[in-house]
Image 1 (tube, rainbow, N blue to C red):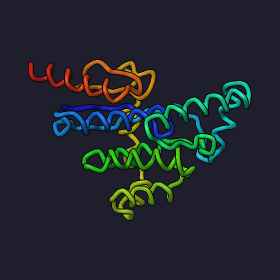
Image 2 (tube, rainbow, N blue to C red):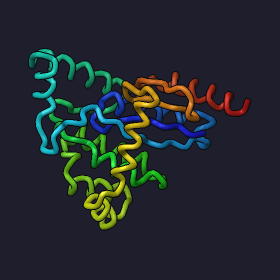
Image 3 (cartoon, rainbow, N blue to C red):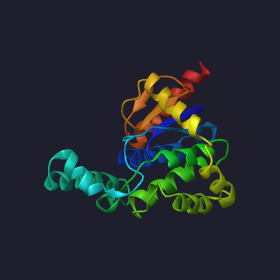
Length: 211
């Protein structure tokens, strides 16, 4: 069963959603039948390559530092509630296009899931610059990819057309919020559901596939 997940590395609910979906897959009797593919979606395609403070961006977006603090506290509490560490107040806002290219490069391997996870950890926990090529190469190597090949890939146009195509398809599939999960290319299910809900969704998707 194919599960496509539209996500962005800098989306806190995607980080939480990956964790919850992973829990459900581990618990489900159908877990070994699931093929997961990550699809690119950018929350802010105009974000700069040079890092800026997420806290400052939130304060500007939501009107005040107090509002930014409250939102960050709420998201952090939600992450902590499922056992995830999150330091969103220290995170660096950057453009994620090249990070999506890196994730796409691993689409035909079993490393795409752990790569997506490490990129999110680097952003949410370690305050690393996930637009910086040296950082992306280090993370790729940590995950098990060949650093020399990844360096060549990032310096080329590799994956650019494919990532743009995924983003175009997201719009065609009416993906307006992330994470969004498509089971067997059917109707998308948005949001970071809890693990129990994901487990029930997996079971129903398998039943429809069998029928």
